[in-house]
Image (tube, rainbow, N blue to C red; front, top):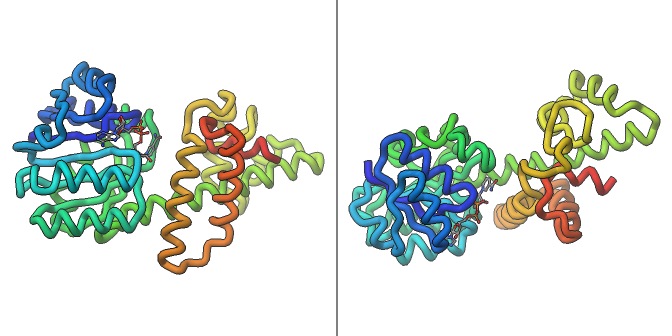
Length: 289
Ligand code: NAD
């Protein structure tokens, strides 16, 4: 299959390489020359013009920074430029409203399109072990699925256009709340004189059980090994968590959904990131306690 890949950054670089490794012919496009050179080294064909990259493609995959860029790239260079039969897959994390708008425009022009944001960071993108949550028609999903399989370990159809983005931001809002809750409880236990490792042992087998505590313990030397044990380097950056929380707050506003804890989590991450911690893993929020 000939696949055009747009956006070869931290995530897209590894994803495009995995498509090439799976035997696809990958036309790679990015504004960055370094990203293009790296993609070439990994078996992709570099293009300096997006419209040329999508010519003759059976599928177009994008992994871009935000909704504004996704909208511009699809309007200017994909819709009306890729062959009509191509399936379009946007894997970026963007706002639900823009995802729906771009999909509607693509469908209006005769394309099948899915939003397919990912769970998993740079290591999962490189290793081909991402989880994709997919929004789109059953037909679009069926066509996108084998392409996503080549870059991930799980591909789940969430519902209609925009449902992938909805799943992603609701999941990450829950993650932010549970990480803050975990940090708060661990520090409180410690201040009350309880050994944090004992707290971990008890709560991870009690009703406090959750991913943030059991699989990503935010305190160094306690529980499982996590970015906390590496000075909060690597993992999922605070700045990216904040991006997802802002998207969640915008979506909640639009849907008139009550999110008092999500809003509090967004404001705590806003402050933590604003204090110069955007590059640290999001579990470093425990430092504020
Ligand atoms: P990144 O900044 O490393 O990569 C984005 C790439 O897009 C860059 O190479 C940039 O040059 C390119 N780009 C920007 N505008 C462009 C345009 N108009 N045309 C072509 N290329 C353009 O970002 P990333 O970390 O790879 O993240 C990409 C997406 O994945 C984001 O939506 C992010 O929220 C999401 N995401 C990231 C992670 C992570 O851990 N990094 C995890 C899950 C989801």
